[in-house]
Length: 81
Image (tube, rainbow, N blue to C red):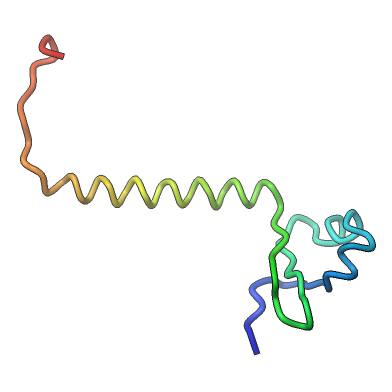
């Protein structure tokens, strides 16, 4: 059985019937959408999705910085730019 990575879940049929009620009942938390009792998708609030994207961007930038830290440094005068 697959792990459900949310505190609440809803069947896809229930979601189709009344999506507004599902979103309201979620109270700002993620909801697992189940098809045949297996997670098929997650309904994530827009604010949480934005935080996830921001965090992913931060991690990608940190990786880039770590990679560039090993590169040879060049001295540049501000007037040369």
